Amino acid sequence: MKTTLPGLLLPLLLLCAVAPALAQQPMPEWDQLTPAQRETLIAPMRDRWNASPERRQRTYEHARSWQQMTPEQREQARRGMHRFENMSPGQRRDAQALFDKMRGMDKDQRQQLREQWNKMSPEQRRQWVEANPPAPRSPH
Image (cartoon, rainbow, N blue to C red; front, side, top):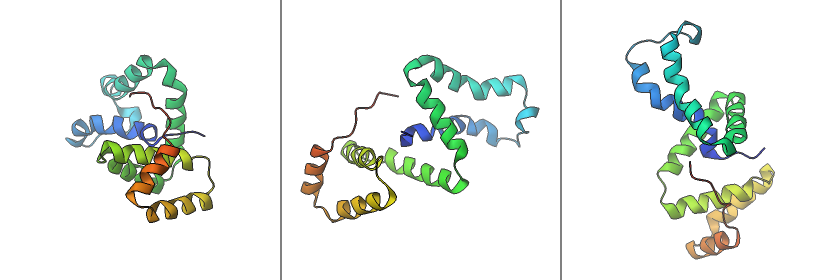
């Protein structure tokens, strides 16, 4: 299944948007939330869903993938997203090119590419990215 790191973290980003309000007092289980509290949580997702019909399938697949992750996998995804957010544009391009290339590889092939990447000079990495450019991405 094709997924992107940013798309995998959609539920996390939604939660982060409402976290300050939730941190003020212990919040009840979902079934005990008021309709207004539920609306506060759901509205950003509904707006994003309605604004991007071309991304609905991908958004849905990412949400399903997130639900199937273990807590450890979710934490790893959060750390990866944090690293990605703090990269320069050039580092992001490189990371996207690597991610796109690794998407179709098995575990051993991915490990081999990581090892190869770590041995490359900056010039060799630049040439590799030119030969393996990241797929175009739509703005979020």
